[in-house]
Image 1 (cartoon, rainbow, N blue to C red):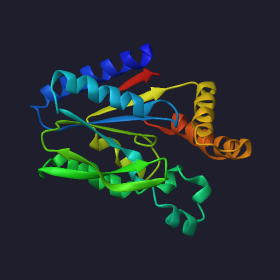
Image 2: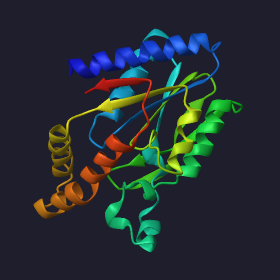
Image 3: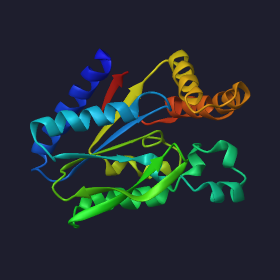
Length: 214
């Protein structure tokens, strides 16, 4: 818990410093890492840390809102591998990042993934123009493989969350147990999807501005 708090404070300080140096123009922060590394928790903590000092300055954009729908994945033959790099609307996410950075609209609606029903809800979150620091969190934000490699240049600050493979397995097992999956379903998700994706992220992501542990 303390490691997460320290990491969030470190990222928040760097984001606020860069924001001030940038003339208070909108700043985009990427927090990337393997599934189960704690990206979402850290992103929420960074948002809270920034907003505690300056209410409304920060907002979070989760990459998971750009999952392809299950019907699309079934047609692609990729339903069982949901969460792999090719199961996201990368270009849609890239266009949204550019739109957020331009900050030309009063309010921007962004999609949010509802894990309980495995569906991305369009317009699930509103980001107002006043939010000057946008924290985008997701697995593949720093991936060097195309088309993901087009995202990194958009971000002003990049962060990677380091976590051991043993911790990843334990955390992901706990996650899927919480959804009532059978032992075989959990084994498939871990060994055929989540852990291979995690290794690909750890080995295939570009070097970030900051590395933190959780």
